Length: 300
Length: 327
Image 1 (tube, chains in turn orange, purple):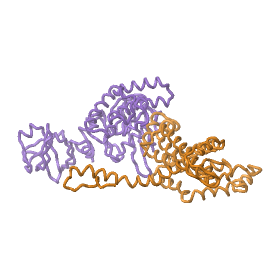
Image 2 (cartoon, chains in turn blue, orange):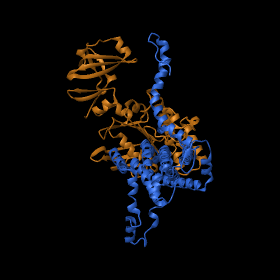
Image 3 (tube, chains in turn red, orange):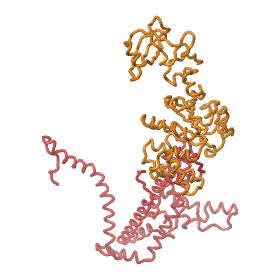
Image 4 (tube, each protein chain N blue to C red):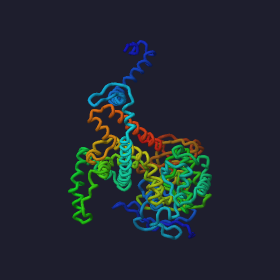
């Protein structure tokens, strides 16, 4: 660092201005740039670097080799796990979208008073007052073999034997995902819906549109940016998750997060890093594709 | 004359809980009339319009169109179309798609839709904007599109909710002429809600002055303006003085007042304000009982015998210019 760009004495106001403006600009940008550099860029660079390192059963060593990637792409398991991750993301997306849209629609268009809208909206956030893991685990006594769901169904005579697929299955994983992440769909969709001018709905009715036609031709198109933001939340959360899959599948299914967690557990950092890099690229691609469909800039 | 397409209110009432927004109003609009519902905000004029449109339920009474009760029909099945105050154009649809929206809802094919939307856009002179989206249009252009969209349903009654309030004064006067032209060409009934008396006078064949949920006075525009029945109507329409005389309250148009020598006139006053308005001079005088009276004099009359502030003047009028007020 030199002092050349620092303020020049006030006797030269004309020359001083551009130079000091640059300095102030850099200084203003510096805190955020620093935070991003330290907490976002550096870790990612680190992961990318480590993903090229080598590993033995008991050590890792710096190198620049493609072994980790070669192994990753050469293995059948990778494709199955990625496919499974996409499956979770897709099914969770469908359910969170349906539920989230319905809830947001109800709040935005059927609840007339703002007070009630805010009250009901806050009600939706109550589950978030406890930790994710606790909310997840609380499903276990409900869904288990001897759980509340099975015993109720048995006592009603709906089933003869306990349902095995209620817990530690894809069903329970997706149930937990939907439970955990629906609010991430509700919030942006509700936000977009609240900005829709109510007279548009009257205008649609004036033009003879039925309720469904209004929904399809007016509300959904105008809610797209919110749907897209919610979709990005849900998809990235589900694709990056490992803890839900571990608890709710009883370690019987895997997604990419679990794969990385396994590698980390075995101290195979380079392999974990390579998987993480591929996951990151995959998620970015998915978001890139989503953004091609809808312009969310006007929402931000 | 009773026509098949007359619009009629029969003790039309709107209640919100205990509050009465529209209190049993009755009125008959002859088909093809340009009518203005005029009144201050909160007088119930918008609620009335929305009840006609079907966007507000009718609490009691009814709206008849061509003798049929339409009070409980869905908005699109009434033979009315509404033009909203903020136009309510669909922001995600092009101008042509906005206009053709109701046709699309009916399941009419795209070519016919396009063609009929084109005809309506031509009517409002917006053909070259068919592919734009509303955000790319000015306020006046958006309004034309909204008009075209309302007219495509071929309504018998067009309802306009403060259609000019969002425009700047210059555009307002231009669109005013446009609305009048359209109404003449289409020959359908226009019901136009406004709080601007100049707008109402300029456009309406008939005006319905509303106040506090009731019709204060209604009739042919000139009849109402020339003979206001209540102080409210006289004041709201403007250009009138409401003067309390020993024999009761009267309304006298400000241009019907003439200046005379104080001892030769019925009223004596002292000039408090002189306002030059170009073609006219508005002269305000304070008379008995601290009442302000404005006389509108032509500039030749005033400058022929100029007056000064504080000068004593006499104000007089022809007997038929004074209208006794009931309230």
